[in-house]
Length: 95
Figure 1 (cartoon, rainbow, N blue to C red):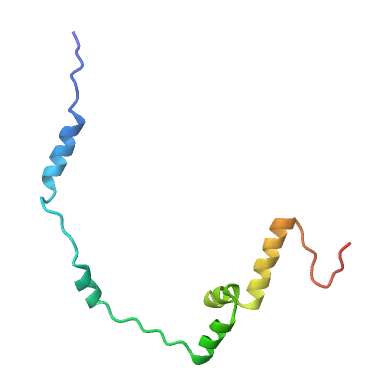
Figure 2 (cartoon, rainbow, N blue to C red; figure 1 turned 135 degrees about the vertical axis):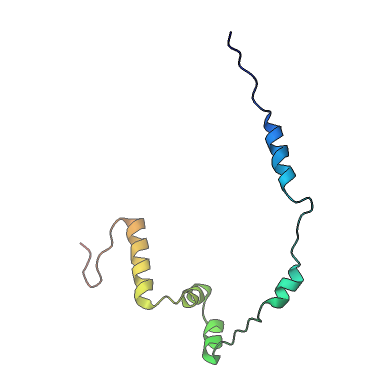
């Protein structure tokens, strides 16, 4: 006669693994870690400050991402093609 013996209980394996772990949890001293980091300094050029103050949010985001006019044009063109299906080339009158 063949009998199926019950397998080990699932919690037994978890208890064995828990016994391998350290008993107390380790915590990092965040203040000491921050003290070890070098200070961050950002000194924008004088004209960069003025440019950011006078520009709109969209323009500032493009400036921060260092997007030039050609890349901005290609991005807008792809967005228009996606939304409209097709976009005429510049200088070509629409049909």
